[in-house]
Image (cartoon, rainbow, N blue to C red):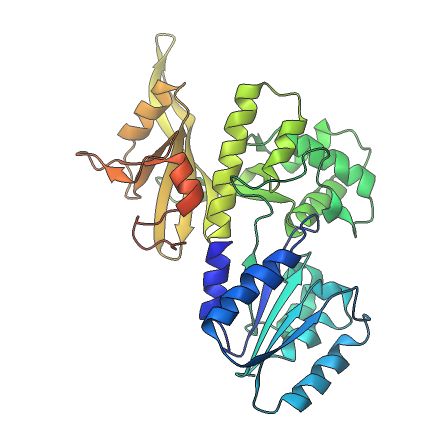
Length: 364
């Protein structure tokens, strides 16, 4: 959240709309009207303010209201805050209305990814807005944990069936799954294309993170098998999984959420290795290295040390790669590097600061 505010402030008055993708279960009013507005007040003076949301503006009236307001503005500065872009008519025209206007800042929320929702029409606004993703739950956030967060399915044509798929994904967070496996395991009596469409929709509605797998040594993305985490990590508490497993999965989900909220790309990092198992040497065994984090040309592999798998941590330390590796230990330890070049950082420190201080990654 802090990183998004920082990026928004750096993009004030640049002639592009700022579009924030949110999960529909989130109430973003305080974020927009308190946190963001306060930051703008601290960095800009003498501007007018316009706020549109479904409760105070008819869906057909927004564009006309924007144009009338701009006509009255002349060269004065103004901040437009618009909630729920796709509630209003002609969403691409709304974004285009602000393009090139250096005296106007537009901050717009959407419950669905813009490119996904507009399909082929997204070419009309390409390069005319800056996109952000506001993670619905980060470490330390207080959220309602009484029910699964399913509001994101508000506009999906088969909500009941999609909800069952979502619950299965939550139960199997962190596992390598394929669309075919999901189709064969979740009995909602729909076709495989339905499963693919529902899962992609949940991702574009900000309900789940989908992590591709990358083989570290070759830098190759695997074409089959993905790893899922709910964006509301607290939904994992609604499962009957053992508490120790819930603890691990939630911390993995928080780390993924923190990296995505800092505009990083996140993948499941794997490699293959040879080892003697049961007296026989076996090779090409998949080794889960943790998470590959990318930010432009910077890369880092992070593995969480939960203190229960010394063999996996030893393999991680010995793994050869041109990508820097980091072990995230439980607690608040600040970043440090040992004599062998292995980086260590407290998991809670990563949750709070991201990869601050690791060189080239965004700072909160």
